[in-house]
Image 1 (cartoon, rainbow, N blue to C red):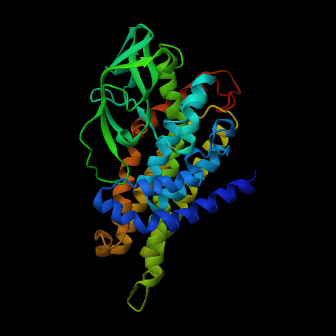
Image 2 (cartoon, helix red, strand yellow):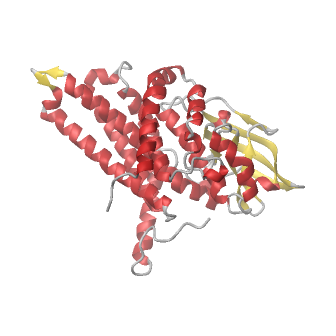
Image 3 (tube, rainbow, N blue to C red):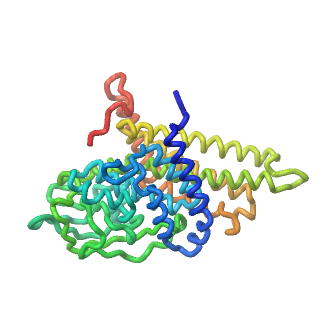
Length: 391
């Protein structure tokens, strides 16, 4: 069993960390305060090849593996979780579904621009009456000559108004179906910009579709196969969000441990007081355990294995750790931790949503428990992840 990263993975991690510290960290507090979209940073991410890191080279990407992508998301999220989720949704929810489920024509037309970052991707599944129950979506896709007409209301799209394309799910005659929709199409509009508790630098918007024409060639997969596309996308998308949570936790731990080494009470650094030392020990242990789950799930994805339960485990635990570690980081700093002069209060706010989007923690437990039951009732010797992914 080898836990060492490969040479290319180490290089990606180092490049991502250097970029994050130089181009992201200095502006994170300002972006959070001003609720501003970091267009300049997104352009620099494109220049670095990070917008299509794990997209195959033949479609304009860098051709790196999924674990390298998770290392990138962790490092960017360590400095600004909003930019981290902007990149994660663009890649795993806005680009990879076309790579995995799209036709060769769709890949050729859509993926290169997404991989280069000249077009940002988004994912339009959630609706006001359809959150965790994806099958309850009410957006319609009526058949017309040459394609479909889409009408409905999508909610909480990360990258919504800055996206150039969105994977939109709607009810067609044969059932829920996925479509690739350019956001400048006639009939597409965006509602009021959402004001959020955390991940402020990521734009979150409602999307309105009013009789939007989508040609037949931009249907993603077969009609009626949309839920399979959605759930398959969420399987590996959750691994990216787990990496984001890991980055938030790592940032909080580093800041709290450095503070504890410098802050003195009763004649010695607070890190030498057992109450604080034990907090730091628990924080680091949880982060390292979460990292193993994230890397395991990414490793399985890279080998074409089924990652439904592995991704759910990684997201469930990493998001829980992010919330616990950021809570304790605020506690380590005491009153200072509650002040905006220190970033731990931002990490604390950013961590909260990781237990909500890409499937709540309750949904992750449901996915995991169903997997356990299948293993218990299935044929002897069945091992999760042994079956390759189809598509």
